[in-house]
Structure formats: structure tokens, C-alpha cells
Image 1: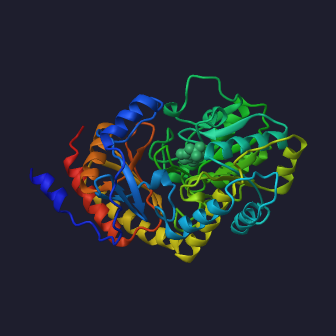
Image 2: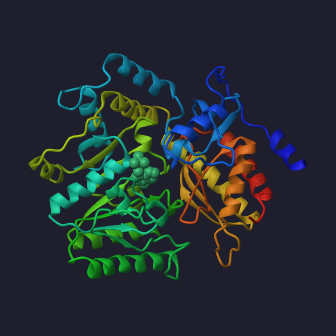
Image 3: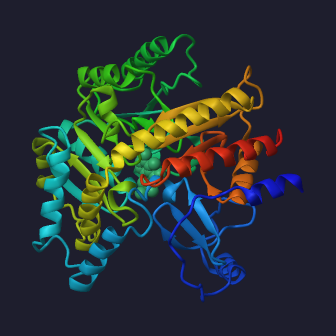
Length: 455
Ligand SMILES: Cc1ncc(COP(=O)(O)O)c(C=O)c1O
């Protein structure tokens, strides 16, 4: 009981938002409805599913009014904060004015939003196609690369995640996110350059160079030697916040281009300031992609995603008809415009750097005290903590990871999990969290790690 008492007395930072009294169906009723009528493949995170009915910035509330510090942000999606007042106001205004007409007609939001994305991307990356989800964005990016190059082969990275549609799924490098169904052919996977789990020994620089050799080898052995595209997340999100050894992306882009490929940066998780030092994940490697795909944080929860590329690449698609009913929806685009303004006005990228740095330092300290932490990685507010049964063998501690999630929930802290073995805590909060929140989360994590047991 002593441990529960500790979780119960931990001081959560103050919040001046009062949730409205919840009057809807009970949690048990919702659970029963969902079990009866929702697709059975939907899954929840906790032993006892958590119901959330209200949000305010970095806070979420359950039906009983209990408050949680959200360190997962609807899977790295709620960039500005839950129901951020400005984003909500702009969305509400647009819904009340014109919800949908389609891109068959002109509407300012699509055009202005595309211009604003171009203004934040390197010169030349200035033509955007809006869609609804990250999967769609990656499908379209790969399709455009294939049409532009006239080639079919695409190289993705092992341990990467790019979506759930059949063609995005083909890009996934995780068996856990592939179905035994026919997927887009011509996708090959090169070694993941993350030093912690790389099959190659040596320093991070050696891992980077051997992983680049592997990429070259895949192109030379599994393709006709010329490819359509190379796609990678600058930091693999679902794969457990793994990122390439320094120098990898720069050299991988060079190899892909030597073999005729376009370079696609999947910025679905790393975009919009989340990594702190940079607005885009690819900037850390000082590379310029040919195509950038975005989703999640772009809309703060609105179904909005984008493919941005150079005009000559985009032009190829005009030889055929291609349409997306909701792509460029005025409401989603209004959300996107508000998100860009809020990120800038509220200094959220700088906050990601500062608070992320504090969290990272605290996680490193926890690693020095908890043997179960094998690796801490990430940048800004995209952080991962890999739990292992033994540091020497690096055997994944998947059971303990679930226990840590449960203990954190007791403390009122929500995090995600990922990695091929489900043993990485994923910390990707709304970018508005404070240093005080970070300290509270670290205290909770210290408690959770101490009480998770060696499951
Ligand atoms: C890096 C990355 N790309 C693409 C996707 C797919 O996005 P969506 O679920 O919106 O289709 C995800 C989703 O988690 C992602 O993390």
C-alpha cells in the first residue's frame, strides 16, 4: 500500500481548467458498445481501458473528471495542445461558414496554407497536395516518385513505419505492422541505422557507414540498380524513437540519388518543431529531401496531411486524373493555418528544445539509477526510453514496459509505447508542456520504474 500512497500523493502541477461535468454514457456502457459494434481490431493501451472525454492543452480528463498529464498527444499529433483555444476558434468559425466544397472550387485556405508550408520548407519544395492522413501522404509521395522516375523500386528502412494502407504498409519495416496480404510490390528494406540495435558493430559513425553500405547493397542486389525513391523517417516513431547514427541520412540520400532515386522524408512525427532544434526532422542531417510528407502535428488533431515537393515532380501527376474528396478541406486547412501561427506565436519549437532538453537530462539521470533502462534517445519532445531485462544482452523487457505504463497511469501520466518488441516508452507530449510538468513526469517515471518489477 505504501507505493500506492506515494502515487496518490505525488503533486501534479496546477491547472486552471475545470472540466465540464460529464453526462454521457458511462465508461462501462461505452466499453460494451465498442465491444459490440466497433471493429474488433481496435485496441486500447491499458489493462482497464481509459476513457477520455475532455482535453485542455497538455491535460486530459476522464469521465470522472480525473486529470492526466498527456505525454503522448494522441500519438504525437496534438502539437499545440488539446482543444487549443485559438485552433478551436478558427476551426469552429470555418465549420460555421463553409465546411466542405472540394478542390473543384477555389477556397483561400488551401492556397494560403500551401504557401505557408512552402515558406517553412527549403527553397524549391513549394508545391503541396493536401490529403487526410499520413498513410495517404506516403502513398501519394511514392506514387509521384514512381511516375516521375518511371521506375518502381522503393527503398525503405527496417524498423520504419509509414502507415496502414496497402501501399504504405509495404513500406513498413516492422512485422507487427504488416498484414499477410498482397501489398505494393517493389519495396525493399535496408538496415536501420540506429546504433542501439544495429546488426553492425562499432561506433555510431561505423554503424552509419556500414548501414549506408547495406543500402547500396540492397539497391545493387534487389533492384535493377536504379530506384524510384528512398523513404525514411528522420527519427523512427512507431519503431521506438530510433534515429540514425549521425551522418547516415546525408550519405544515404547521396547513395539513393546516385541510383536515380528521389528522397522522401516522412515528417509525420518529426515535423512542426517537435524535435526542438529544428522545424523539420531532416534539418538535423543537413539534407534537403525531394518530397516531404506531413500529418499528425500539422492539424493538431484535424484529419490533415500533406505531400510537398518540387514543381517538376508534381507536374508528372497532371498527366492523369487524381482526386481526393477531403484533401484541402477548408476546415482542416483552417486548423493547419492556426497550428502554424500558434507554433510561432507561442514559441513551441523553442519550448520543445528547452523542456525536451530537461526531460532528456532527467531520463539520462533515471538511466543511471534504473538498470532496466537500456537506452534513452531522441530530440526535443520526441523521446524514447528502451527497457531491457539485462543491459548486457539487451533482451527487451516488454512486460515491464506495460507495467510502467500502468504505474504511470496511477500517477496521472500517460505515455505511449513502441518498438518492434513493444519495449520502448514513447514520450511525445503536446509541445506546450512546461518544465514543471517535465519534473512531475520524471518523478512519476522514477516511481513507475521502481515498481514495475522485472516482468
Ligand atoms: C512516421 C509515420 N508516417 C506515417 C504514419 C501514418 O499516418 P496515419 O495513421 O495518419 O495514416 C504514421 C502514423 O503513426 C507515422 O508515425
